[in-house]
Length: 352
Image (tube, rainbow, N blue to C red; front, top):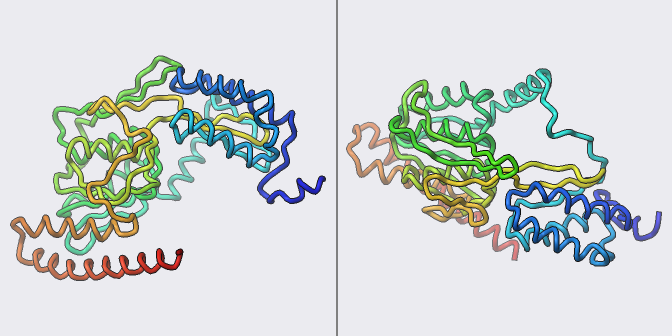
């Protein structure tokens, strides 16, 4: 091992010219799957131009992954295009291989152990419902849990849906949960996924029938920089239909679905292979993300949403007992928000 390679971190490996060329050629080849053919051709032409001598100074796996990712994202303006490096050899996986019943059962069990990523469902003081989702698991796995969660929350006076750490999942679960928050008729055409490679469109509509009752009280959705993909579709749908108030930070801006491709023993790449198109606007949130209605640091979003809900409820006719509960809780939550604001300011001051 050369002195240069010994200086590399444990999660990196030296890179020879043969491997570097093989990875670059694999990237060029796999860009044929990119959902935007014209941009793919531009990226491929750029990489071909650089292939001869443009990467001689790139001498480690991590360096090549970072360099190519920066170039691809700069030319495409697509933050989802990304090359990944693994210091350990990647398994040989066929993405077209059908999942066996045993593997599907194992996936369901693992999902079940996470409660299908319905992380918290509770009634907060002041009769505010709270639902924290870490992902949108498919209805065939998580449907019963979703029904149970919405049944539990049905009699709250307002609902907070926390998606700050939700990076996506199943469009079908997005449609199901949106359906609980929207009228049953007429069905609403929410979103399309267009797969250029197959010239196929996958439509997403609200459901005309749901077990249990629909939720018609005010809704507040907590968002942040980690909120991505299918979670953003949920947010975008409700925002365009004026059904929810968004609190927190701008979302990730990752609209288009895709998958990973193995390029080499130590390299794989995520490539968007489909295009998300909102039927409500004809556009999507790709690249731009979704802006909150009330912009606050993500850490302060829960208490901010509670106070917004309390203010709205206090303007309506309430039972005296609920009004007293909200007024008492308002003071407690406001004090908690002030403490968190001070802690955040102190933390930021310590980083300077």
